Amino acid sequence: MRVFSGIQPTGQIHIGNYLGAIKHWVELQENHECVFCIVDLHSLTIPFDPSALQKRILETAITHLAVGINPEKAILFVQSRIKEHTELTWLLNTICPIGELGRMTQYKEKSRQFKKNINAGLLNYPILMAADILLYQTDIVPIGKDQKQHLELTKTIAKKFNQKFKQTFKIPQAQIPKIGAKIMALNDPKKKMSKSVPQSCLFLFDEPQEIKKKIMSAITDTGKIIKFDPAKKPGISNLLTIYSLFDNQPIEELEKHFKDKGYAEFKKSLAKILINSLEPFRRKRKELLSREIYVREILNQGAKRAQVIAKSVIVNVRKKMGLT
Ligand code: AQP
Image 1: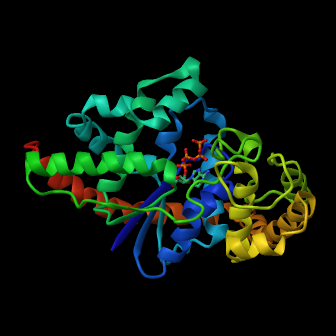
Image 2 (image 1 turned 120 degrees about the vertical axis):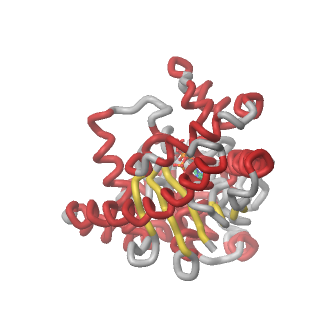
């Protein structure tokens, strides 16, 4: 079974990216053929600084390695190195219904967020994502809840292509965690934690003091009771989810444990759990920061391995569409 997933080098990786996606990649690499991609072409759809992009890509690669992606097991590479991604995007553009694109939640949200930069790339983002996935004949796509709609469109595009040009693509399935698929913003628990809104995030490599400060000032709800109720208590429910996943304790147990205790005590305890859980990641990252050549070599080797798969699939697609 082949697994594909990607992450944008749009900023530091936060605990939402980790709990929703990367944590599961680390598990899946043990018994699946995994292809993990730093999707730099996707990141161009929102405002960015070209002079900082290479550094961001390198930092994203270091993050993968620091949390446990093993380059001996998984393929790790940068999207723009493999030209087939853009070629397949164009080909899929020609069969993707335009109405579907305008309905995508991410497109609507990002258009509101970046009013002065509503570019065609933002609209076509899901087609590039479909190309990423289909190019590797993917079986499983481990993602957070926010990407579910894009994955559904990928399936629609793949089925349409197969109908029109004969069986070509595997139909991929989303793998979305039951808990942690949508970690909410610390500064507004009704919105998702998002890299492009830094004040919403707890980053994986935040230092202990920062973690404590962010957790203690995370927006919670009125009242005192520590209870999981996302509709009425979104703030405390979000923190309970984070606590439960990092401490491997069911939410009900945490509710019992903190029954007669206030928010401050709960938050202090959560900060401690996070400081300890994230410590190995911080340590590994610091070590990798001084090994840039080693990290670049991993990306080079990853690109070579990805290229072999991508080439064989695009040759078949071209043939099916009558291009060769
Ligand atoms: N808040 C979240 N909770 C759970 N999973 C999340 N993911 C993102 N945010 C959360 C999952 O992380 C993977 C990589 O995300 P991405 O970088 O490709 O793009 P994104 O979904 O757009 O992530 P961000 O953090 O919101 O970045 P920006 O602000 O740059 O757009 C995906 O599997 C995603 O589901």
